[in-house]
Image 1 (cartoon, rainbow, N blue to C red):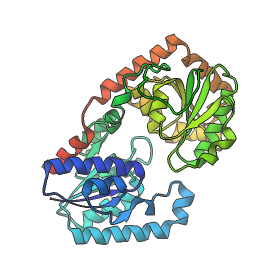
Image 2: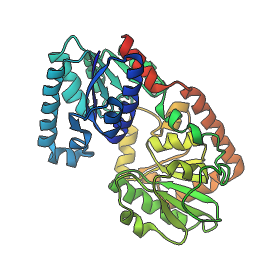
Image 3: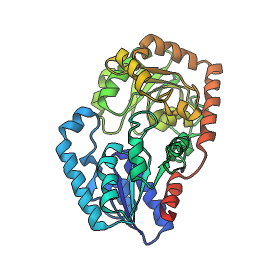
Image 4: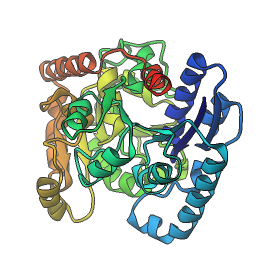
Amino acid sequence: MRYFLVAGEASGDLHAGELISALRKLDPEAEFAFMGGEAMAKAAGTSPILHYKKIAYMGFGPVIRNYRSIRHAAREIQRAMLRFAPDRVIAIDSSGFNLRYILSFAYKALPEAKRFYYIAPKVWAWKTDRVKLLRKYCHEVLSILPFEEAFFLNHNIPCTYVGNPTVEELAPYCSTDGHIGSNNQHQLPISEKRPLIALLPGSRKQEIRRNLKLMTEVAASFTDYHFVIAAAPGIEDSFYTPYLTDHVSIVRNSTYALLATSKAALVTSGTATLETALIGTPQVVIYRINGQRILNYLFDKLIKVPYISLVNLIAGREVVTELLAADATVQRIRKELTKILQPAHAEEIRKGYEQVRVTLGKKNAAMGAAQRIYYY
């Protein structure tokens, strides 16, 4: 069969690369065309039609400023799709681009092709109007979050939970109990005798600035510990320099090892909260942004779910404390960090983490998705 895949960012490229490898095992004669990056190119054995960096703009302002180039890229991908005439069209994450330009186009121009969404838009949290688009354009949604399956099925959208790829990625680190030295095989490139606390302030400069400033201010009150920043890919070391002190340092390409040897973590909401939970490190979830009090109001009025961290969403209850917008203050973070450093409270958090692991299961997400796509 002929498979056309579209991933619009680095994480999507990684997951799509694994999906291509799984499809090859099921379909040795498979042919692939795609927009993506290096992971997809390696798995497919061919270059992308367009690299995902051509459309990888985040935030309202950057998207508006680059709208013409994004639209030009979309048209190039649409023309390639027509030339390739795929049997299967697979959108991976990047909901704005994929819903507007890929699945809607395939629905009209390639009615015989089966259309799938792998790593679906978070319509259960916001932009619920996209539910109608998914129902119209997708033959099936392939979910990596277990609670999504019931949500989409309740909205008459065929959906299968295929597993979560993060579970497999973190398997070598998931035996840790979160205490320093418990995973000696995961050595960090730092020499420090004090217990470690991990800082994961996000992946974009704007969110890093706001969250890391708070985190390092909190660090000043915990001189018996050494705080370590997990540097984000694509963010230069010099960007972090103003935040470094004698008890705050930085590591790169060692996030999982850092979490596996840390007593606790301060984590900006996102996939990092799930990674921290699977590794077993007690955490406080922080998300600071401008207009804090207004944002608190918007969280209450617009967000359709009771939590923002994947940990709490998957567990269906508050396993870790979330400090959002106006609630993310030095005083509150200091108080919550002190709490999770206590053995009894840390153990309660780990019990919640175990519930998350059980709920996620041990399915191979890429193979699960490949089977649904191939045998549809």
